[in-house]
Amino acid sequence: MTADSPRRLSLATLDRVPAESRPPVDPRALRPRLVHLGIGAFHRAHQALYTETAEAAHGGGWGIAGVTQRSRSVVDALRPQDGLYSFTERRPDGPATRVAGAVTEVLHATDDAARLGALLASPEVTVVTLTVTEKGYRRDAATGGLALDDPLIRDDLAGRPAPASVAGQLAAGLRARLRAGGAPVSLVSCDNMADNGAVLRRLVREFIAATTWDDRDRLLDWTTGSVAFPATVVDRIVPATTDTDRRTAARALTVDDAGAVTGEPFTQWVLQDIFAADRPRWETAGVRFVPDVSPYQLAKLRLLNGSHSLIAYLGLGHGCETVADVLATPWGEETVRAYCAEAAQSLPPTEGLDLPAYIDSLVDRFANPAMHHRIQQIAMDGSQKIPERWLAPLRELRAAGRDTPLLATALAAWARRTRDRPLDDPRAEELRRAWDGPRTEAPRRLLRLLGAEDLADDTALVASVRAELDPGARPPR
Image (spheres, rainbow, N blue to C red):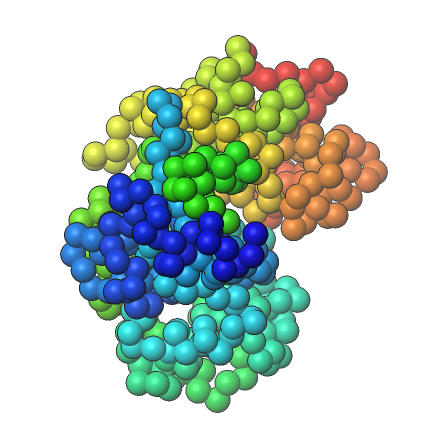
């Protein structure tokens, strides 16, 4: 199928799409007022839809310039389609598909670096959002700060013309923005990290401080007063798109869509209300603005994301392919509930956050047979996800003298995976080497690789993990 195929979704073929499946806004009336770094499936199934809904309700011309960091696949899929793509909601009673029209242009971060730099400097752009995954932040595992020895960071600091790291791109963009007049801007991390706003602020400032720029001190001062870093919590399960999904979209739209994405019916977005400049009226689309997102963030990281990782590693060891497959086993629901009950003891009581109801909703969402959410996708990049999902509650619960059998089971399930299978993980080789030498010491070495020296020295915890690693280890009953 060629880029100008009459059967491919685009502005030229949009009138062929059934009226009820067309965007609620006119894509031609939008302009790039928001830049998004990491325009993968999640952004297109979450923040982009909220932005489109807010635009339909309130106006403002809020179009999104989406930027991909590495692969050109999203550019190749969406650019010939004028940024249009479809979203299919996977409902238990059948799929519902519609076209989304908020993306006005699609860029590659380094190939289109000049355009990206111009957008980041433009006073028309007042919000930059990010979904670059945990590993995209290039953090030091021990300090949580910027990994200055990371090759991407090191080369950017050496003066690479087109920054390849997110911190480098944002720092260069802020510098250009200051030179262009210093219009305020909000940088919004939408990745699954505790205190993601504070993390992003630290990494950007540490990058600027590590440069040899003659205006770095002025830039840091300006950033303090004119750049906001709101924290946020995002929640929607977005499985990897399959050929079946693309066929479903094509049947509904009557045109082909190379950029189709899918997601569950449930969706949530909680934002800290500290924006520095104009933003879409996301509250009209159901976004919740709060002074402090941390209770919602902790509940999502430790309950949803934590249990997701646990059942992914357990499920892979027991022949399951999807989350729903795990929930269909005799032990799946019980494991999710037992894990959540344990991890919930580390959460502060929060008005308006009903944890028992939240856990019930997780079970219902995980069991949705229409999702086909592959656990291999969830198991990726474990070394980047585990510290906040499992290690933070482990520390707090063990410091309070509480038992942590499910968290020990979780660590063992992940450790078993590092031993028995090739990993899709940025630290795969280091994790594999942790099994060299006496295998009884592997749990300690793995914990140290995750920056958890304290937990590596917790004899009782390590003994629990070792016991779970014995041949025949089973999911909890």
